[in-house]
View 1 (cartoon, rainbow, N blue to C red):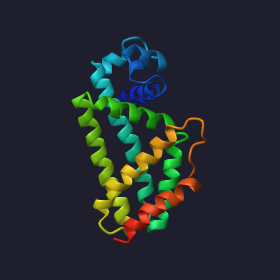
View 2: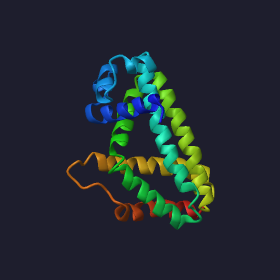
View 3: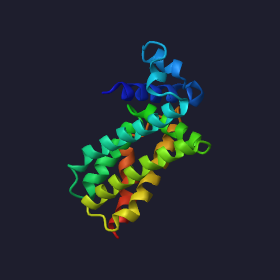
View 4: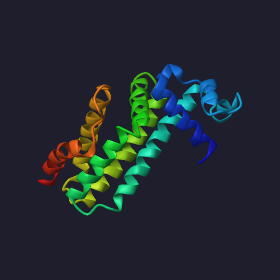
Length: 186
């Protein structure tokens, strides 16, 4: 892992814990146990740090989706894989999801960040389209956006209820299966 990736990963954790106001070069240096000024050496401006963080989030998601791609042969495989991945996002990947939503809100006021997030979303949509296609879903490109929006809603709903236990694969399977079954009908 490069120093830039390490810094972006620390920024993700900071945003999840403290929100966008907690993200400063000095805070990243402290949290990463780096000498003061290290983060600003790699990312001269806060905007550069924020955009790099958004790109790192997209890289993490792309890597997770790439792992799924080789194991899918049908819709049932996709349901199982998607439920497992969403369950992971709500537990061990929770910080990344919190940071993603924080960055999404910030992007409504920051055009550069909006562009970085839109580029990551286009990459995600292409990957989801391939996953749906590999699973036999007709019109995969049309359904990719719906699946992404649906999963976003499931994740956000779970994150907004902090007292509840996170959704797990068994809870998510029927929800994801319903949408994908509709997609499979073409």
